[in-house]
Length: 265
Image 1 (cartoon, rainbow, N blue to C red):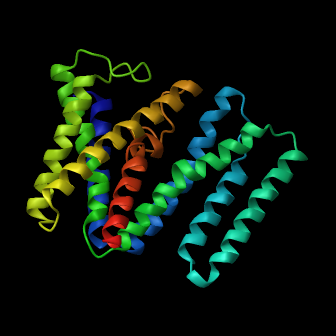
Image 2: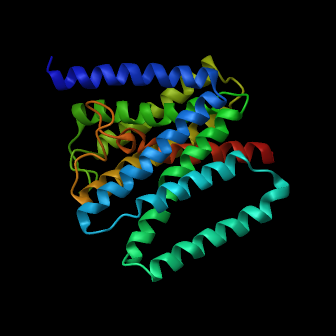
């Protein structure tokens, strides 16, 4: 067993145990770590774009992220119009700063996109953690089962390349990931959430699995474009926050939208 593999294994065990603990206790035990991870993720996102001659607006991106998270935590329906006005004012302020600074418009775009790509999904995770049910678990089950089964099937049966963005990804691996995800969500239904219908299991698992794969490929595309191997080095053997949460950033919106439809019905 190599030292690299040992580091990856230890990080995976510790990280997995921590996630399970946070999912059990939920509430502010999720909100605080999720907020910290979101800020670190925004920093990592800005950092990699230095490689392509972008001058990342670190302070702007981090302050925007904190502002969005605080707006979410303090939100009250009566304050909605004030939040919208404040958001527009912040956006105009950023544009004004850009006009009178040496920053290229791409620098501004990177900061704004980091909010959509990183912060919003983490806020959705916080919102799901408030619910008195187990949907928050599915955010991670969708991502981890797709990744695990995709890896196993890809190693065993992979022949046809899925995309040039990630040469090691295969069509067979992707299909195995989707099937494994459906199986995992089915088992979760039987053991934990019997109220889910089998149609819901199939739709949720298949859609979430595809979203997980797209999230993985999106991160690979960004890293390929910027010429980096990992977003960061925070987690030994696993890279940074965005390397570990790339798929989860895409499965969280799927679960949130699914729960939103449930409330409509």
